Structure formats: structure tokens, C-alpha cells
Length: 92
Image 1 (tube, rainbow, N blue to C red):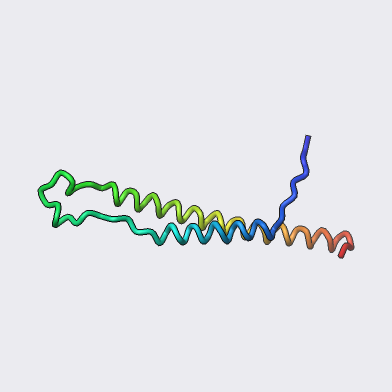
Image 2: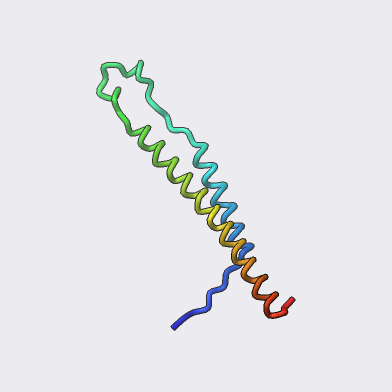
């Protein structure tokens, strides 16, 4: 049995703006990295965790921005579909 789903393009766009802003904020974060010169000879000199975290955070930021772009396009498509249907049916 099907259900009727209602989408509010304005709210979807607002959510997309928030997701894009979050992605940009996350992308702007910097991760502390140990200074290799100060750690020379130490067991910590070869740690890669900061680089790995930076890569993962960059992926999260990119995914948020990608979701935001997709949501904006979806909102535009919903608006276009509504307008086209209204035109075909002669509705204001």
C-alpha cells in the first residue's frame, strides 16, 4: 500500500544550507600534528593517526557538501515538477 509523501522544498533548501555550512566548518578544522624534528628517535615519531584523522574528516566534510548539493537539486526538481503539474492541470 502506497503512502503520500509531502516534501517542502524551502525546508529542504534550508537543511541543505545548514549541511553545507557544517561541511565547510568541518573542512576548516585543523588537526594538530607532532613536529617530527622534536620527536626524532621517539616511538611517536612515526605515528600516522593525525594524517588518517585529517583524511577522514575531509571525507566527512566532502560528503556533507555533496549531500547539500544533492538536496538543493532535489528541491529544484520538486519545484519544477509542481510547476509543470500545475501548468498541465491549469492550476495557479
